[in-house]
Length: 116
Length: 113
Image (cartoon, rainbow over all chains, first blue to last red):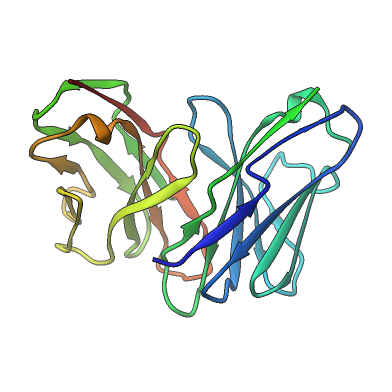
């Protein structure tokens, strides 16, 4: 299957700083990208959906000014957690889909964020 | 709205036992159905999929059949291995290709040697 690379795989940052997570589709054009958050032993919570070149659509309850999503190209989307706090510590996972080819989405390996 | 319901875990089995993880869905139209697997500390990997009624997805000994009449997509494996220990997510994607993927809550599977 297609490959989605997410970077970094883990990061520790100080409270109040911002962290950027990158999600790249390596061998296909990701017309749609999704960002999820996963709490320990729980399912994935969809945070936002982004289509290349347009603003992301955020799910209810997700602060768009807190979690900045940029999908500037067909192979790259970034999630920036601004002014991070300990409660933002979580596992963040991106997925990408070539909407022209089908409904299947491919997932990155996830980023574990720890805010201290 | 669309939703996915899967059996709660954890499920604990002995090696070589038969596995079934139930999954039912609610959706308008004809969604595509997926099973994803997540190994500890990793992202999700697509395990198998089915895009229309009566399709059977299969991979690594796992199978699931898209049953429109019962709105189900149960995951089965005839003989599990310790390496199958992971969390399994049932998911659907609406027929609209721009729509999001909706996940079930996940089922944690433990296989004992």
